[in-house]
Length: 240
Image (cartoon, rainbow, N blue to C red):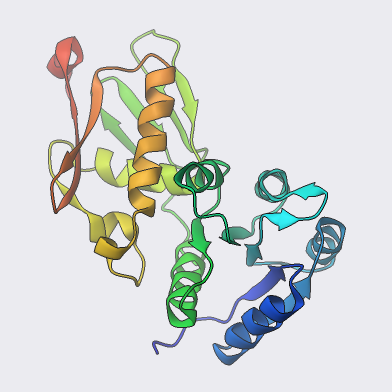
């Protein structure tokens, strides 16, 4: 097992006592400081009283919607969120990631893989982005700090992405026309061939751009390798 760089303060939100205890045990063995709660109000109290690095969040919490709780966490705290749930439907995964979760793990899971995902998410969140990290492709500018994509030629287009979506889009826009591997886009310690989360994030990026009327900035799959981004149509003549 690879050691983590810095132990994180992790909150396990799980109303199944046996599962919660198992998660707590795995995380403590990996060096993390762990709190275990079973409800939204208890989680809010922990977050008010502590600097929380990561929340492992079950979606089934009785009367409270786990997705709404995830969105609230991302608005009100700096904590990363990994959803750990028995919901295996693809639409649930898409909804969870689009709510802003950094990762989505389905039960049953391999403890070592879960710990690898925890370490990867904590590592990403511990790395501060460079000042005013940005990328430009033709008329489109991505501002990493506020996670927004805008168009600079007078058209009113402004899209806000989740942290993970912005990170993926930044990597693609910093390499226009070139293939970025799945390994680079995943930035995690599990094999990209075994994890489709990056595909869900890319699908959500495409959807947000499409819904905002952007049809000339294309993210294309490169089979078996990764993705690349390029301009099409009239915008392709713009400098990038």
